[in-house]
Image 1 (tube, rainbow, N blue to C red):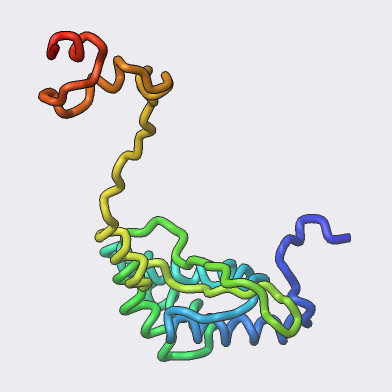
Image 2 (cartoon, one colour):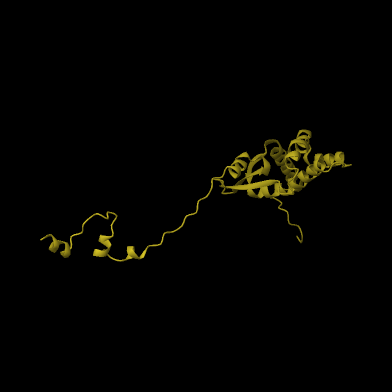
Amino acid sequence: MRHGKKFNHLSRKKAHRKAMLTNMAISLIEHKRINTTLAKAKALRQFIEPLITRARKTTTEEKIKDATHHRRIVFSYLQNKEAVKTLFGEIAMKIADRPGGYVRILRTGFREKDAAEMCIIEFVDYNTDALETKTSSRKRTRRSRRRKSSNDTTPNTEATTESTDDEDAVVDTPENNQEEE
């Protein structure tokens, strides 16, 4: 029975799944953004966020005794010295004040061949396009609807023709014609 076993097996054996997630995590750390399927991205997010939290804790806490221990634990997952160095150096400094949610998944549509849902998984603080649009977003203006005035709803009559923009214009009425004679 599967009670309490909530992670996605991704149709792979344990060793294959572990190797795939390790390779994807190294690629994400190296390139800061990768394209993959939605299921793999969700599994990768569960795999990499605890590792990023370990790296962040070593940079934020001043007197941490087990910095080497945290590096060794992360290295046991990743098996790549350069990725661990980048994670504990550059990435940990950039996300030091973030309480969680280090990666973002953006859906990009469906793959043409097998219709698998594709996405981009990226570090939140490394997306320069999204950061620029946040700061330089243009001011939104309010749009209001105009109500029709009561004059607009009534049909044209002599009263409405007399109240035109030209105040000096003379309107032909029978009273004006009699005065001229």
